[in-house]
Image 1 (cartoon, rainbow, N blue to C red):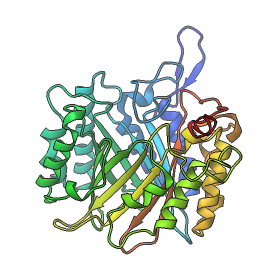
Image 2 (image 1 turned 30 degrees about the vertical axis):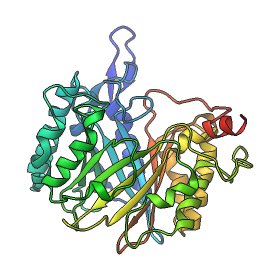
Image 3 (image 1 turned 90 degrees about the horizontal axis):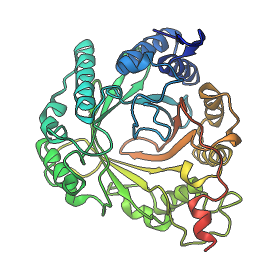
Length: 383
């Protein structure tokens, strides 16, 4: 792995994208309780998946204007918390970020996925079944393929592939999702989902999953807290009060300085909320529901986002100290000095399992967003 590159003009060693993100990953593996052997194996996978981008010096611009993060770093981390144990660590990346075009980006991503599948001997049948729908000759949209690695003990990750339903145009996204679900054995799924303002992702589990899922992500513009419970289609699903309170806490509708007094009708007027609906068995309804709140859009700085995350984790009896250790594993800056380090907070329900809370952490390889005085909810409240 190339840790630095020497600048020919100045003679100085410059850190590379691979060196930065590998360091973050190794430290986060400690937070998640993974041993050094597994952590180093996963670091190698990260570097290989990034390809040429891993050796790119950080004093150059990002390899592409990836939609994966606000500063265009092609890597994002997340910690998923359950009661009574260490969080599980995931890394999301864009394997084709240095490919130069959306079409080549997608093809490079597919190549990486198939190389990993060959190495660890898992099938890519679900991806093969829908490949033509998501990789047209002239792709559109904000991305082609993302890959998430769930990092557990043993050094072999479980994979999730994120595909873009808007690759043939936003107006065809619902049709593409419907066709993909039909091919994957879920013929009537789309009609069971909540009203959508868009379909940003379709995700597939690949590898050693106990019950591989197909996941449909739905965008909800201008969502109000009291509307969120009706978005779940699980039966049984999460309680109404639980979901509404999660939105209010994550978005700061009543729990910190600017959220006080926003009232019952406060809405997410900036970056929208997302829901994820997971399906495991053909012919059945959703077995999983996740609500994603873009906390970075509704906080003045990461100190507020961290406080809200701490409140949520404590409410569910989860390890708040692990999240506090995770932030300095990613950055040396104070939470109050920027906004966006904690990008999303998510509440996940899955049949047969306790609820999970997930915090998504930005690498911030290229830029730290400065704190803001008036997030969208505060600006709306003042009108």
